[in-house]
Length: 209
Image (tube, rainbow, N blue to C red; front, side, top):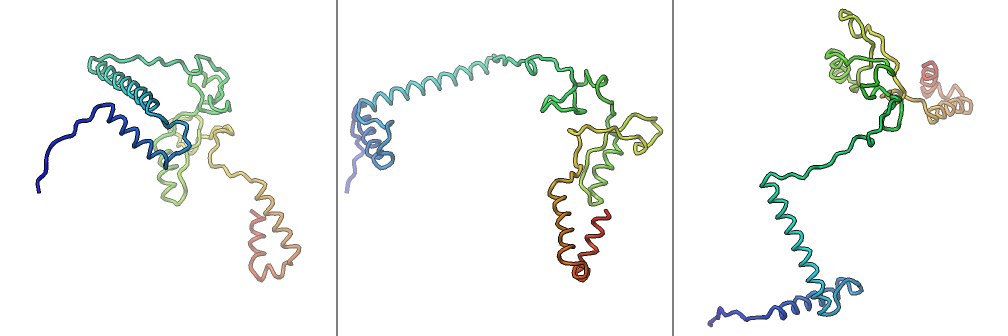
């Protein structure tokens, strides 16, 4: 059985028509009601020309960018000033406009109490040592300046702004409601049963705390 290696010549118009026929037959199942599918061969040619023009522009832009990089040309990116150059001298945070220690340094001393950066020992105590003791790491408290011979624990903390407080437990309405429920349980069930179950001691200790 012999085989030939001959190729059948097809014109460009025939190839485009066959490509459109494949897309047309496929779109009958994929998107039969799509308004973007070329319905005629002329619409297909228009679509192909628009796509080829867009692809040519993309390739041209890539070539120009590559040439600029090779020649060392760089497009200068214009960076505007922060907040349009507006000067905020109220000492409030740029986010949410709250009182905070995280204020621009140029207006820091005139508005806020200045706290120096914590020492290595303080950072280690509040970080690694707390973690080893089973507690979570915690940012060191801002403390006032003191004599170099005074231990950092002896320097009084500077009162924090509400925005800067981290990890402080807040008694919400849910906790208050739970305490009210404990009082109702004690009144309705009775102290004898709660004492037998061991709950009366727990409630008493919770109230003392």
